[in-house]
Image: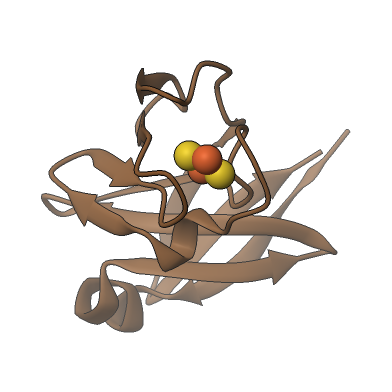
Length: 103
Ligand code: FES
């Protein structure tokens, strides 16, 4: 079934733009892009790196290890050496909380 779980506060996300957080044991990274909120799996599909340690430019997150990139809105790989997507998660804002859907 899955459920909505709080990942972080909206204020903190707007401040930091990229936040990595374990949600029910799942490594998730939430992003703020032009006032919208997105989330993907936090581990790069290319290797053992946390995307939340990377660099967000527009809607692309750059992996800190080999500088491949992903579209944070879809999880699709954009730039090599990343080829496989990272899993996207649904997000929603409730009051001042950012929630992600974990199933
Ligand atoms: Fe992310 Fe290689 S581990 S690009």
